[in-house]
Length: 321
Ligand code: HMG
Ligand code: MG
Image (cartoon, rainbow, N blue to C red; front, side):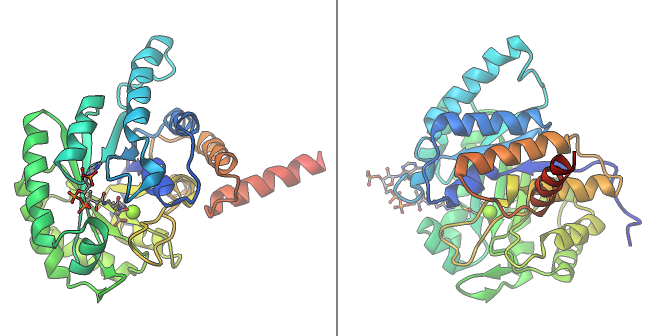
């Protein structure tokens, strides 16, 4: 094991979207901006800032347009002040259909992230469409977005387990992935939506995908509901994946997937990767500051284990001084 570790991994931060979509409280736009700035300041190059879905379905992100406008204008303004002047910073947002895409496009986002499910039941509950209908919508939006010069990512949810139907046949995903790439999609993120996959399942699926596609365009998106996310990252790394999604403090969950709790915490992922000699470009100290900020904004302790350990240790050391 560990013979195939990459030198570098891309960490794709989904906290401001996957995290905040699942919070009971409505976070003010200014707090969202402060959190996204802190995440960018920690060196994260890929940040999913919000989603342009129906506000009736996800009221927590009803301010998507306002947030994206403020951030993109600020990005340009801050570039002059060198605070946001990183050329590799890529802000993106989740989009379910052409209506969401048109609004995202107005804000100037250069990347949109589509989504659909591998299982029929989750597809119906999450976007009110069958998988075939969703594929057709993804094709329509991808073709318009690519013609507009946008980068397009697509999530496939419930890749291993569906909260309504149970285990998902891997062949469904193996058939779906090449069809999505054929639509012009640049990157596909495979989601363990309810955090129920185990490492061998992850390794086996990715290993089989190798025959269907270029693994450098595959990301893995693990929710940590049963504590298996880091083990699943190791399985994904060993199989050849180099892009992993995670969420600050371990925030996250899909409101239309019962039992789905937080994503893998970004600090836990970065700590493990750095400890194994894999570079991420992320500053772990600044990341914990972003995690503390998220806790302050939400007025609660977040589930991320590194953050908890780091804060507890800092408090103890302070007390000893
Ligand atoms: P629908 O009700 O079937 O939509 O919802 P519709 O097309 O029939 O339209 C109904 C109303 O919604 C209309 O308004 C539309 O204009 C409006 P009305 O005439 O009633 O006033 N509408 C919209 N408004 C704003 N933005 C839009 C939009 N589209 C329609 N884009 C729809 C279908 C897809 C919109 C809805 O089901 C929806 O928004 N679902 C999103 C659910 C969601 O966000 N789930 C969480 C994200 S997925 C996830 O977390 C998993 C992931 O993390 C990976 C993993 O973990 O596996 C990505
Ligand atoms: Mg998710």
